[in-house]
Length: 103
Image 1 (spheres, rainbow, N blue to C red):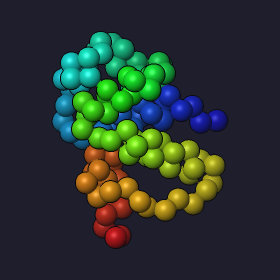
Image 2: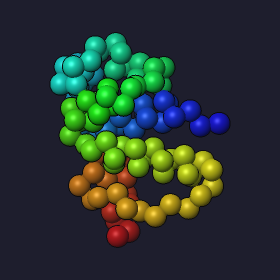
Image 3: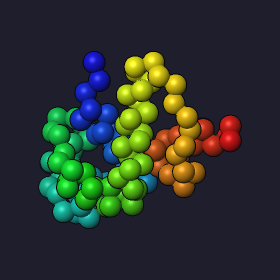
């Protein structure tokens, strides 16, 4: 069974790490405690829509792109084929730069 908070946390953590940023940097920019952001990234806490938007802004990634990545991950678990429509600007930040090689 897919747990959305874990998928959201994985996507956010991956984007932060690929940017080479620390939890402290992003938590400060998002105006959320470091501990809470850590729990969101580990899928232990479910972020509100407002908090998720704030974290995405701090990471400079549109909320829609993060939600699309989460949706794609869920679709794969469900065995549904998904088209590649993630903008190239964000493919690397989401760890999908290998998809660019096939475009």
